Amino acid sequence: MKLNEKEVEILEILQKDARFEAADIAKMIGLSETEVADTIRRLEEEKVIVHYATLVDWAKMDNYTGVTAMIDVKVTPKRGVGFDEVAERIYRFKEVSSVYLMSGVYDLSVTVEGKSMNEIARFVSEKLSTLDSVVSTTTHFQLKKYKHDGMIYTAKREDNRIVVSP
Amino acid sequence: MTITKSYVAKSVEQMRPSGIRKFFDLAATMDGVVSLGVGEPDFVTSWSVREAAINSLERGFTSYTANAGLIELRQEIARYMSDRFHVHYSPKEEIIVTVGASQALDIAIRAITDPGDEIIVVEPCFVSYAPLVELAGGRAVTIGTTGDTGFKLQPEQLEAAITDKTKAILLCYPNNPTGTQLDRDDLEAIAEMVKKYDLLVIADEIYAELAYDQAHTSIASLEGMRGRTILINGFSKGFAMTGWRLGFTCAPEEISSAMLKIHQYAMMCASTPAQYAALEALQHGMGDVESMKKDYRQRRNYMVQSFKEIGLDCHLPGGAFYVFPSIQSTGLTSEQFAEKLLLEEKVAVVPGSVFGAGGEGYIRCSYASSMSQLQEAVKRISRFIENNTK
Ligand SMILES: Cc1ncc(COP(=O)(O)O)c(C=O)c1O
Image 1 (cartoon, chains in turn blue, green):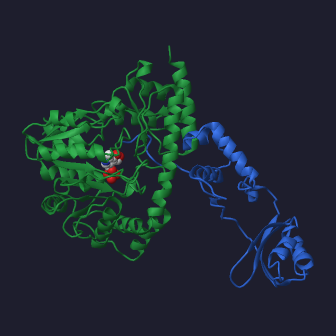
Image 2: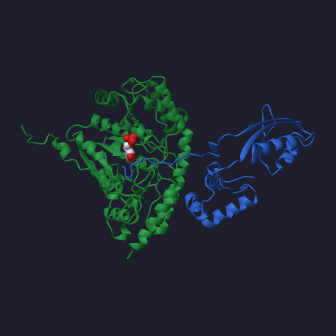
Image 3: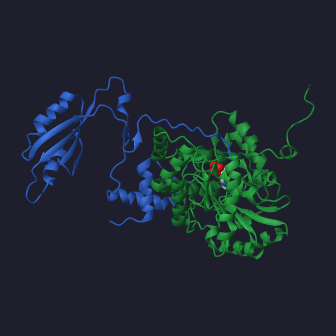
């Protein structure tokens, strides 16, 4: 699908902050509000814009126990369908938040979110390793999130500039 | 014995204090001010550049550099100027690394000014030009550009200001405070006049990286102009490095050696860590410049469009990070407008009048602020205009 310059610009703006309104985006890139709204609707329909979500720092919540693990998975690809079939078997689990096919020493990088380490351990041993094509798994638990999708969790935006300058 | 006289030099006593100071003093005492008064980027210098300076300190590079600056940096500047603006200067003889464009302006003006020489200053402009000319013993002859030409200097205006004492003309495009950019044809017309009267140009191109609609044309790149141009540029704006205090001059050898004489006595050399940072910025920082420029461009469009909707006339500025809307429809002077806006809505802008002839009736609004700050400022200004329209 060929995207024009304005469409790319709209996507870049929304990717930085999905809450920009069509009216403001319109002013920023020199289109009318309707043109921007129509373009966004079309990009949503085409699934170029997949979803809008909020980046939450759950660690801020008292007694939050959730854990995230990143699992390196080696698999044997199947004739005809390659890695896609096993990837699909994995991403259908609701615990799985991302699945990437990787170059390098393992094949799939799987992110799993759970309420506790036990829960994830159970998922890996009972659901993931038992899949036919899975050869091995290596599980890494995340200890702390510093930066995600370009956002630094603890960043304070301080403006130290003097208020009026030449 | 008691002190019975002032020791301050007459020439300094007579200097006008900058009109910006007053607004700074007022705004600085207030809480919750949204400032469109800031003449520097809101971006922090990119990490790779900061890291390069830290690294230079860790390695103990803390001594003076050559007067004209690190030769590696001058070589990078030469390459950069030639890649970006098609002007070619010898790193050894024709480039001087300075303490900001500010000091570059100072040595440029002092190197060419004899007592009584006239330097033409095109206003509205950056506040330091005329004072620097006068400190150098010259006379600043001002020309006011106007809103109806989008604040572009007209060749006839220039011709009318030229006398047999005229030595040089000081140009700044993209311009602070108007954001006006000159295209090639505009520059050609001015260059013709400069050649006809055998003048020199001091071209403050500090905003050259921030040209939004077409690539910046340097006046030094025009036919026959290299020999009669002192280019001023630096890292403050495009590279978001104001606090590092680093700029440079590019000029033919004779003028460069004259400037270097002043520079070596008055400054010795620019700060060494800053020079290492600038080296990194030129070698690996252009991607960051591009991405900041993209943001500025969107903000510029947003501001111009918003002022139009509010009902304030505003030309589309081709560069820098300022919009310069007219506030004449309010019946207020630009100073009254700025003061009232600050008191009633806590938005700081700079009255156009502080930038000299042609600036009255306009306000300078910097869009070197996050979009959310700009949105808030627009909301407040819009309310202010509603409340103040009879
Ligand atoms: C037109 C112009 N020239 C020169 C300067 C000074 O820049 P520097 O920080 O490099 O001294 C500024 C800064 O505001 C400016 O706007």
